[in-house]
Length: 562
Image 1: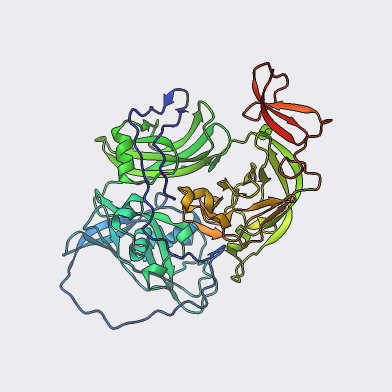
Image 2: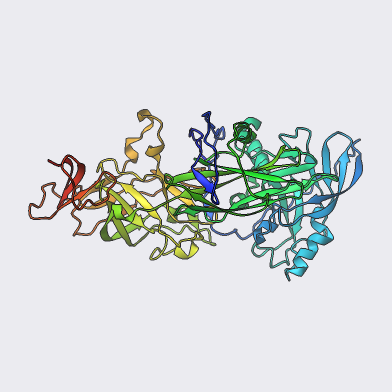
């Protein structure tokens, strides 16, 4: 998620009939540090690439024997945050017993060959799915010396059987290893500090016998940590429990990512040793960091849920501001200690259609999302031209929105995984014809990486000195254009920006368009006069002294009625 400087605010929500979120008595900024350096990001693929050209495994010389010995601790529990999530099975859904050993060098634990356990293999058999891995055994080793920054030993976790057609990695010509990794491994290898990784909530932890790997990724046939991001967009959690560990597993889900009314629905699943669950809702995107949860807990911002596990519906007392929100969820043990935390994110997008008027059907040349994604042949979808519905804001002439730009007639609409039961919009601010830009717009598109939004790069400039004048778009002759590489694409869950645009973006308004920015500003004296309040709502009978927006033909102005 991107760096934000939002002040911590409590949303006015109610649980059922009465349980309201407390109002903060102290305000405090939760600043989410960004990674110290961003790597050049490759074009994202819609589907997994064929692995026919995967690197062959390099077999080095045998490792030298060392003095490390391992003590058998007995039976622990293991969960799969790497492969099973491909089938929708999470760490809270399925754990199985595995042998656990402890190193003579300290808090280092070995989970012995977890991916060949009988219970794990039975899951595939019972689902009539061919077991995808060879018999080659591999252990999973985790260094818990620093419980706040646990290190997963990067290495092979399992080997894909080339004959397993259900593995989901295309046609294989050889057995291929899956290297297990985590976000913490990846960003450590790419130069980020432990402080930055922890602030972002990417760190692995160890507490009360449970190892939590919040974001698991893997490399397909790759032996380097910086390349182990094959499943980067689908990172899931894994929980590894040594013998005697408490079951503090804890997950939360937003049931509807886009809130279009006053209701928010979410689910919580808690382990047997969590006795109480609490929640808080904050405007903005915040990391699932220990500091954030400690602050919420210390200031009594968190409200108790009726039970630690269940499905809950929250109803806002009043319409919240549109934008991004964070749902904080915390689990407590019988002693009242916070032992588990998680966050979920959602968007409030309550539409006010009465504030907009139709411009009509327009010709749209799209060069943003289409040039970001590739097909299975590694060829970009490319720039396409199609017809879209366009609306203009009544109170702010020149502020346009394209209705559902990535569904309907868009040639690649079939690749959109987002729930499109309600309308989504691509906003275009052309109020200044020389500085056309895209305000942050959740566009109703998900290519497998979460709900995506677009925003002009200049809109993220912190001061005027950071603005690049060459990145503004233009509005002339009823045509809106944007220059190349002037827009960022990111997702709700990962604000890492992708620069998009090939300089082919074009929205052509119809010949009948008569907006104040597209035609001569002289008003049509014979056109009817309309009045609106400052919120854009039509006023049938304005009163004397009332400040309103007056519209006649193509002329729009604020006036005080006399």
